[in-house]
Length: 300
Ligand SMILES: NC(=O)c1ccc[n+]([C@@H]2O[C@H](COP(=O)([O-])OP(=O)(O)OC[C@H]3O[C@@H](n4cnc5c(N)ncnc54)[C@H](O)[C@@H]3O)[C@@H](O)[C@H]2O)c1
Image (cartoon, rainbow, N blue to C red; front, side, top):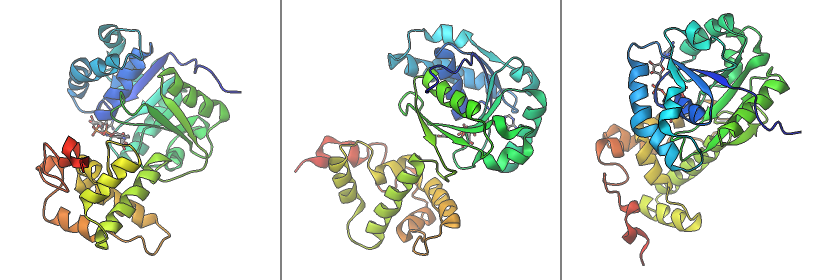
């Protein structure tokens, strides 16, 4: 039977960067009591400013929540230490930088400080890699949230291999508490669900261009019409940053069993030339007004 609500009222967020700030804000708006801790002095204050200025207004504007931004902000308490943050928490969500050694250290410390459910928001590290660092891994789980959390209203939950059913169900239910669509990742999977699918789209789009079959703008035009989407592959790669895309591609290729899964020549050349997409003003499109966002892009 589906567990309707998680029963989790108090959550600690470790890491007050891009994702930590968004998960904390959405949790608070859903009525949770939230603590936030970051190892970098001043990071929690800066995160609070972003929450007040950008994140909470964007979440409130979705109309999904009845509460106000200021009520939500009053439920987010900056913590002075990891111990302070986890005091009384039923769930801890780790959102520190994507570095296995750093995360392992955090989980070792957390598992000594609290009996709470321990979740990692890592985009690429399965929680099985954190199990040996964690006492009692039956309470360890991947909870993969997405940015921006007011648009990408979804959550992927993946077991560490030893996660108890109770913890897995509570993690899924916590997503629903936050009005997110929660999906169960049933087998350990690099890229969980959606990043694998996005990767397949990226890889094939790049291959089509590498082979000279089509140019990137035509690929995007067809994609936008076929999938009725405003987010075409090359436009989205520009948004993410082509250097980041190359890193992600390399990390998948490193574990791929497919011998034809080779780096894209077009992508590599663009990264070498320093045309990285939105962040450099030029990539597959010219920014900040890329052609695919203009009405004329799809006009016949
Ligand atoms: N940014 C995204 O779009 C996104 C989406 C999904 C998942 N993620 C995942 O979320 C995690 C965080 O990513 P982010 O983009 O928010 O990173 P970020 O760099 O914006 O924030 C990370 C924060 O962690 C803090 N930190 C580092 N070591 C710490 C420690 N030992 N203890 C406490 N705080 C520490 C840093 O000071 C920083 O404020 C990563 O695992 C990433 O894979 C990111």
